[in-house]
Amino acid sequence: MKVHDKEWFQKMNHEATWFTIMAARSIESNDGEVDGCTVCGDKPAKEYELPSKPSMPHVLLCDDCLQIQADIHEHHFKEIKP
Ligand SMILES: [Zn+2]
Image (cartoon, rainbow, N blue to C red; front, side, top):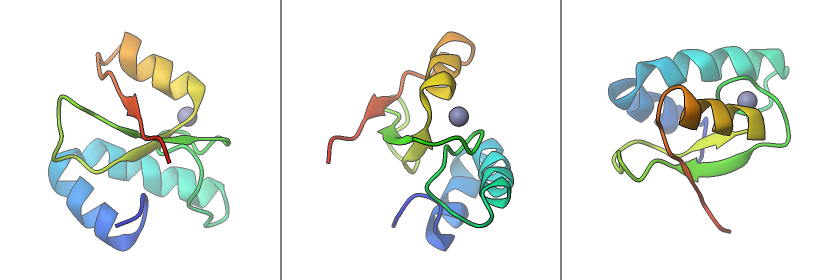
């Protein structure tokens, strides 16, 4: 499963529907490209996991959205090292 593929959308829809709504919008704003930030579509975006919710698929986040997730939503994402 890759971030933003069909399987990702199905799984994420069960785990955190909000992210699928944002992802659909961000992909549309990038003319169908799937490598932008899950939340806002900005590039570059890096791949992250949410250790407090291991069943949730990985997301792509830009630096701004990573900060917002931590500050406002208290979601402390951890970067996936390639
Ligand atoms: Zn973003």
